[in-house]
Image 1 (tube, rainbow, N blue to C red):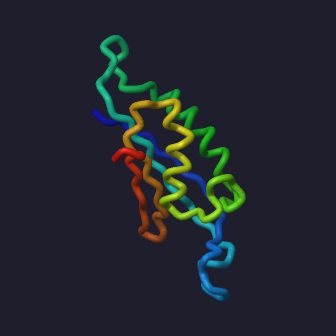
Image 2: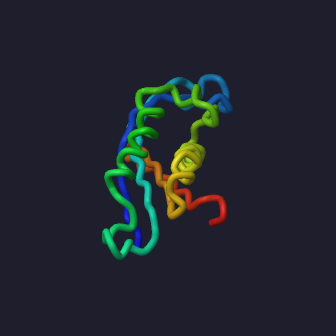
Image 3: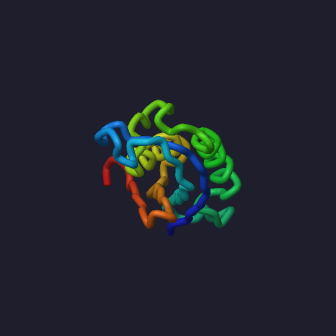
Length: 121
């Protein structure tokens, strides 16, 4: 069984590997959407794979670290691609949730999305 929680954040970034004058090399921002999924069997006592209230609190911590920030300034996000943002979020949630199945990050306005299934997938 899989459960998922979604949250959003707004942030700016730039990509320094583009040549001068490229539009993505300039500072720009996006509204990002994140979906975090956990997989497992429901606890017989609670009926939960995991408590959504706790997942929401953990994701609030991640959101607070990302929201209204310049992503390039965050350790591990010097080149803040969707791929690297997924791994960055995974690295913060995986220690709390051994059943973490995937992290997806998208920019809906651009029609872009990346899904990370963890280091062993």
